[in-house]
Length: 230
Image (cartoon, rainbow, N blue to C red; front, side, top):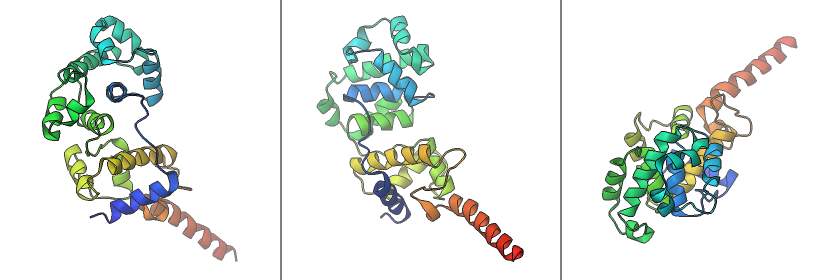
């Protein structure tokens, strides 16, 4: 178990340290954040969450008029749609009396199936909720994960479930590892592995094929120019 994936994880962890994700005060705030972050930047989610003040609780969302809820979460974009999604996920949580330990006693497969059947919840949102809100060992695959796989490269597959299975089969089955690794992939994508990559100083360095393809040819051209000049 491990190999290439573990070496990536260890390199990122050594560089960035533990990131203690997800940034939230309560498990329910994680649930709300996982829904609101769909198709928007996290900075917008923070603004929407701040609009709740000290009232971000499942009872508040359940009892707030849909139009008023949409107004509160407006900074997150797609607010009318996401208000319905928040109502749906909160109704799911209500089925467990809004109690985290009650959810944690349920089988993982059952919970994931329920979440995927909830309006507005896809695989990434479901796994984010199960991992970050409830501590289940399930790996979250996002656009940053796919980008890493393409550039490193890692032949993890093409669709969500296949990539998820690949990561889980090559890493220790621990929530803390999945939590930390996903967070590290995200921060490195923002710092270095961007759409237009900034490879200089990246902790993955020459291990990354993208870095090798960009940096090495430049180095060779410089050496060649020096030799020609001389």
